[in-house]
Each structure stands twice: as C-alpha cells, then as structure tokens.
Image 1 (cartoon, helix red, strand yellow):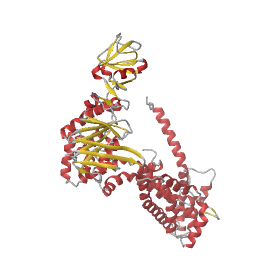
Image 2 (image 1 turned 180 degrees about the vertical axis):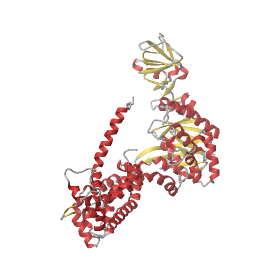
Image 3 (image 1 turned 90 degrees about the vertical axis):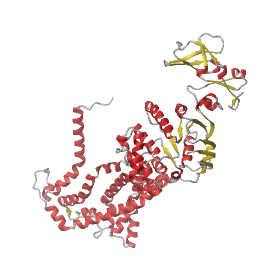
Image 4 (image 1 turned 135 degrees about the vertical axis):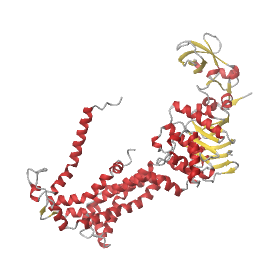
Length: 335
Length: 276
C-alpha cells in the first residue's frame, strides 16, 4: 500500500513561505509528477513527504497515518536523488544493499534481493564496481536499484534524469515508467520538464509559487487548464494567449489557442493576419512564428511539411471548439 | 582540439620538470653530501661535488656529543601528541560547522585563522612568563600544548573544507536508507572523511615536527626536540658545517620518509580541498 495524502501542508524558511498550504490525494500505485518552474517549491514538497524537511503546518498521511513526526527512515519511502547520492566508497552491491543491511536482514537474503534488483536493471556485470567506474546512466540505475530493493510504499524521484544526456534521458524515462507499472508502487516524481511530466504521469501536479495550480491527468491539463499559468506551462510549443478585441468577442479577458489548433491559410481574409518571422521545417511538423501586429507573436503548428517561408503573409484561424477563455484574474471560464 | 603531445614536447617538458625538481631538491642534497665530508672539505672552495673523501665520522660525533634518540623521541611525542589533541578538538568543531552552520560560522572560522596572522614573537614574553609560573618550561607537555594551539586553526580549517565536500545528498540518502546517526557515522561519513583526516594529520605532523620558534624558546634539554638538536650545532664557538649537516640530515630523515610514502595524501592536503 502507498496512499499519500497531504492536508494543508505548509513550509516556511524564516519569513519566506515556500509551500502555502498544499492539499493532495495520491492514490496507491499511481505515478504522480510534480512539475513547475524552478523555485516553485516542488522539490521542497517532495522533501517534506520524504521527511528530510519538517513541515511548518498541516498533515502528511501515508496509508492514513500522520507521519509529520516520523523520521524519514520510518516512513517506508525511498528516494532517488538528482545527484544520485551513491556511497562512493561502496561497491554497487554495497550501495543497493545498504538499506537492507540497515534493516538488519541476513546476508544471503540481502544478496538474493540485491541480485534480483540488479538483474531487473541490467546491473549484474557491474555489481562489484565502485560508482566512479560507472557511466552516468549506470549510476542512475544503481540509485534506482537502491530505491526498489527495499520494496517501499512509494518512490520519490527528485529530478533523477536531469544529469543525463538527451538520448539517455528518453530511454531512462521509458524504463522508469515501465518499472513503476511492473512493480505497481506509488511514485512521486519531480521535474521541471513538462515533456517528462506529460509522458510519465498518471496525474500531474502543477506547482507555481508554492501553490498547487492544478492536479489532474496529463490530458485534462492539456484540454482543460484551470488558469493561465497551467495553460502556458503545459504544452509545447506554448499556448498562444491573446488579449484585447479578439478575447472580448468571446466574452473573456484573455483567450488561449494552442499552436496545433490554429488553421494556417495562405491568403485567407478571415482569422488573424500576420507575417511569418521564422519558419521551422522539421519534416514531421512545421512551426511558424507569426508576427500578428497588435496581437503579438503567434505560434502555429502544422503536421507535415508546409512550404511557407519567412516574410510570407498568412492568416491563422483558431478552431472555435478549442479556444480557452480566461477571466481577468487568469482563471478559466467554462460553459 | 586537444594538443598533440609530440615526442619532442614530451622530452622537453620532462627535462624541464627534472630540472626544476632538481633545483628544489638541491639544498637538501647538498646538505646530505656535506654531512659526509670532513669539516675542512665542507668549507673548501671550489666545493667538491662527489669526489671527496666520504666519511661517516660526523654522524658518530653528533650521536656521541648529543643524544639523537633522546631528541628524536621528544620530536615524536611533541609532534604526535599535539597532532592527536588538535584532531580530537578539531573533528567535532569542524563537523558541527560543516553540517549545521549558523550565521556566525564564517566569522568564527575567519577569527580562528586571524590568530595565525600575528607573529608568534609578539606573544613570546607573556607566554614565556606564563610557562615559567606554571613550571611548563622545558617540558614535553608545555610544547605539546603550544604546538597544538598553534596549529589548531589550520587543522580546523582543513577539516572544515573536507567535511564540506561531503555532499549532503549522500547523508540524506543514508537517512532514507534507514541509517541512524551512529550508523551513518560509521558506515558513510567516516569512510568518506578518511582521506581528508589522513592528509590533515600528515600536514600537521610535518608542521609540528619542523616548528622551531616555540621549541627553541621554550625548551633547553629535557624536552628539546630535533630542532633544538640542530640549532645546538650553530654555536658561538664557530659553525661546524659538516656536523650541522649531519644533524640536520638525521633530523629530517624520519619526516622525509613519512612524506615519501604519503605523497598522495600530502598533495591533497596542501591543495587544501581546492582541487577535487
């Protein structure tokens, strides 16, 4: 079991409020990603759950039991650090088995579990090496091995892939997701990379300035952002946000249209007129950055190749069903 | 693009390195050579480099005139004792400053180092008088005490920089893995700190071994270490170069051997945690 509930969790460092009251319900076995810009408090929130920081207020329930006064070791969670935090003087075997040794397990049982974990992560040939003799990806696996071998109630990942190169990151992303599904253990994963969030999560928590902006599945966040922040943060390239007359026509203060929901017309008279500033041809997609005068810069995405170039005039027609409306405070208007 | 190490460049830099190495080592070599000359040859102009009458009589005379082993034992006790006590005080001090620093930690460190900026001679008279009143003059305890205090700031600084290098993440990982403070200390912290402790200890041993100001001023015979032993050969009745060299060679031999076997740790100690 690994059901985690936060009730009004707060954290301040002196006069600075880092977490301003977080409420969250994480179901057993789900993969939840905390995402947000740097400094939004996502790592702090993870460390509060881990017990590496003390809460300033509120409750953290793990399987219904309040753990705010429980030391980290007794919470039954395991953590994968951004820096891997491997013990440099221990072999891979020693690193993975350390938690079990601390728990007082018998030697052969530790060995059996360590070897099973190593086999899952393709680390068997490296069991007797020291961390410094491993590549970044292998070190990452050892850190994950150390987390899974203890069969915790939940895994906590603190930006674990940010030190890897792009290709390895994609590969590890898939492996971590697959492993989590296979083990069925609750996972909380912190990242600032919204692509990681969208691809890995069952549910995403978008944090901004110490507040939870929205909690929902990746597609809910994409299709129904609660506010301007979530609208702008989720999705790549970013949603186009337009104010002024076009927004007023829809009875809103701001409207948002995703680049993929703008229809590109070469010489249409309707829609929003503009001149292409930059055209990016990726083969699979074409991205157009269009200078639309008073509306500002707009981004449009076309699936496939479109032979348009910088300087061409285009008109962009938003898909009426896909227009997001926001009020003056930035909250979504629905209905 | 990386520079290609041509054979010529390798040869040139090797010769250069050996040249400068030799230049730095030359005084020690010269001292060793002189210790095997007669007093007359030690003075000779032009000096003879290798082709002189080799003799060990200086060593015999030195051992006969003053008891080398007595002084060597004093040096070992004073250097070893002051290092041990300094470490016992410095480890917890550096530990707490590295792992739970306060607003004032930096100031305290700087203040400690500032005590090293004052020339020792400035406090010679008061220290001498205090030692006299307490009967600490020419006592091993007195020397252990003063050298320990003298080196303490450096020891704390060095240990502080080493402990600071130990990433917090690793300690937190150990806590997540269920280690109690005691087990964290035994299984994680101490093994990681050992290289730092070793190099600090070595450097401090060498500093204490070579310390001459306080040992010369506060000891005469009973507690006199090897520095006093060397100094006794530059006497008013004239310099005995060959015997002085023999005494110096004997005095530095133990520390030279120690240094030879612990070069790696020493280099790390001297770079003061600046290079990882």
